[in-house]
Image (cartoon, rainbow, N blue to C red; front, side, top):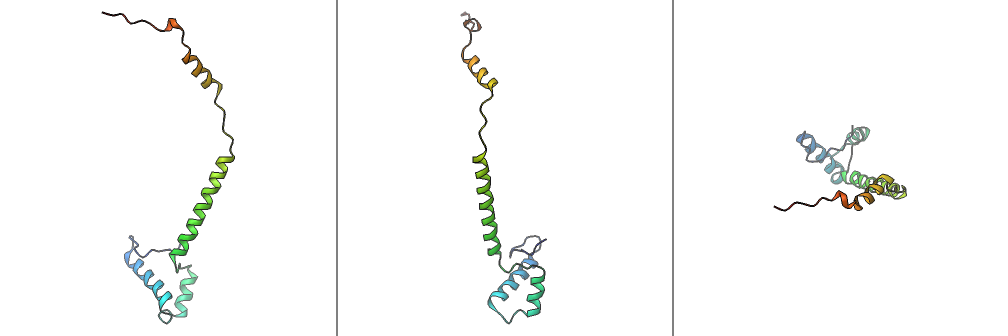
Length: 105
């Protein structure tokens, strides 16, 4: 699990509001949260800022995408199979006997 509850948490709106209030109090009102409450929330890995998590997530996603792109560029391209090449050549050079003239009425 995690403690990254957004302010508008649809499964439990009251939890979202409570979490938002804790974050606001932590940022704006030093006397609103006791040291004990801060300690307890830190013990459950409470996320004081979702923006920081979002930035880290974005950095990780960009890094993963760059690694995938580098692997893709490093992988040699496969040459076409001989069957596909021969089939393509054969279909271009049909024998005249294979073409039938249509009878006109």
